[in-house]
Image 1: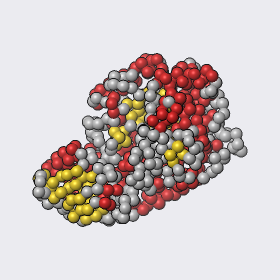
Image 2: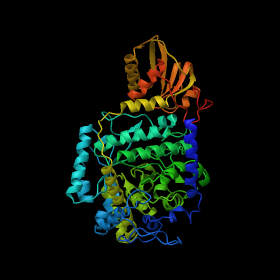
Image 3: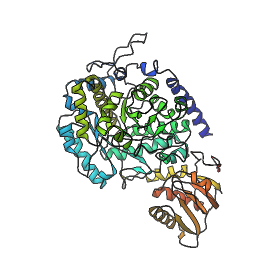
Image 4: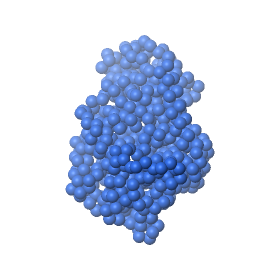
Amino acid sequence: MLARRWRARTARAVALALLLIMSTACGGAGDDGGGDGPGSAGRGARADPKATPASSPSRPTATPAPSPDRKLSWGPTEAEWRRAQQTVAGMTASQKAGQVIVAGFQGTEAPIESLRRYHVGGVIVMGYNVDSVAQVSAVNAALHAEARKEGRDWPLLVGVDQEGGLVARVKAPLTEFPAYMTLGAARDPKLARRVARASGEELRKLGFTMVFAPDADVTTGPDDPTIASRSAGDDPEEVAAIVKGSLRGYADAGILSVPKHFPGHGSVPADSHVSLPVQHASLATLKRRDLVPFAMAVKDGASAVMVAHIDVRAVDPGTPASVSKPMIDGVLRRQLGFQGAVFTDALEMAAVADKYGSAEAGVRALLAGADVLLLPASAAKTHDAIMAALRTGRLPQARLDEAAARSIALMLHARSTAQKTPSQVEFGGAKDLSYAASLQGLTVVSGKCEGRLVDKRISVVGGRSEDRARLTEAARKAGLTVGEGGDVVHLLNRGEAGSGAVVVALDTPYGLARSSASTARIGLYGRTPEAFRALVDVLTGKARGGGRLPVHAGDLPAQHCR
């Protein structure tokens, strides 16, 4: 009953949000800025860096007097937006060019030179930059200290991909959360909010100001090689509800979040890390499916959106969305009405780097309406390319000013949000929440719904060595014996099928439809210690899984246990 009620509420909210989408590209919601002034310059107008936000000239009613405390639709106040514009007006061209870059770095030392020489607006921490939590904390502290030393009176953007599941750059002792599909299976936006808050608070304690999450992608089946369990599921409305919960949870934690990968990476059969995916669906299909969570995010006040490197044939054939004006300015801004900061996906990825070169892709992204260039192959070369485009007049100064101002306003908003949300957390302090999420998402798709599923001895096969070790540890703590001759618990990696007394999908559940089990088939969607603890509690009859399949998997019912 609860699930039906929130799905109904979600459907009504999504329908309202999609009224924005269903407007035409020329007269769409992006023209109804209502004071979110950045939108006008993003449509090709020359922005006055000292101007205050104003309503669209086509609006027949008088523009209300600006209020410093009034929030723009994407978070910052009017005062923060004006302050950002004034800051940009006093910056050199070189500083502006750097402000729109979020640079990567090699090794485990803080990339101070990127700040000093190229004035980058932010830094992204990848897995190869992480040696330990103490080291990451020291790197982030050094970056923030250098920014203050240089006289920046706005925070540095220090971001990380920390989605949970397979994409989590910082490991223990931070809490490990299962894949996002777990939350889709749990069908509980409030749980998604709690998980996002807990993760966001730990990231804030490490010195991060931004997290590149959640995945707002709608996955469309086993042919999705990139997103898969990173998505909450294949139902657009349900994905939108979980994404909304996550965005609010990150906001509760005082950390900025960036929903991704607009216009949806879950329905293309290629990985943009290695090639340019082609989206053949019509725009009408995208509006019914892929764009629904993004419309919800915009309606709920998302401050930023990440744009993927996807060739959407129905909108701008042959051009990645991340460098496409019809996609960014036309669909995202005009039709969805988004006025906030547009981030590119990583510019070092082959989908754009092979086609244009990473630095040239950065210039094209700015021209298309993007505001923040994420992880170019070389911050130096990208900075030089932006400066060259300014000198030749190819890149209008007003467009760079607008992008830099959005970046600064975003970070001023980040600081005010963090100041309002003090938090006391311990690294790894949310393990019980991680367990609860896995248990609520765990889906028994066949077999008994209650009671023991295994005897006192089990044999663990399949999966990865770490998976088997974690399940063995959890089983032994629960009093089970692990060894040959016991009930076979077969762990499945993505795409695999298998057989045993119990078959458990650790990633997407599609393989369960092709598997045989004498006792039960289970979707777990995670391989954290807490996920395996939840699994053992279900195997021994101590607990009951609460999930439903978040995707269509062969002829399996969405909910076997009710």
